[in-house]
Image (cartoon, rainbow, N blue to C red):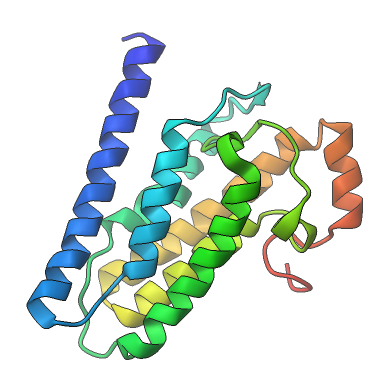
Length: 201
């Protein structure tokens, strides 16, 4: 199977996963009359759209761990589903998700078609949210996913959240191993110390 065929199959699989995730949350909304997962659905859909039109990298990691962590960190939460008897009220959960969405979309707006999945150099970005942390998109995902799991606290969703977080942490490490080969990124690292959460990590 050639690279183009693999790309088409990957893109098609991503679209299907996003559609199933959105449908599950919409169906829950129709059944209960309460919105659920609005922030997560918006974020996942927009990220998938940018993924489909991403630009090719100038440098990419070929480490197996980077290729495993990338889809896990990016898309495993698409397997999450509404549920859980003791979630926090939607009135609180949805704003938490939307805060994460705003943070992630602002970062994606700066990144544009330079978005990637596997650790690669598609150009160093330092504007907007990138002035606060080196990986603001992942911060947005962390907040959004936290809101979703608090709203839908099932064992499945918690396990997926933990797996996604682990994947994102590995992605951060692997991405920086590639990007540090770029002089401009090394200068950027000296200015912005925090990777994910300002003044924490």
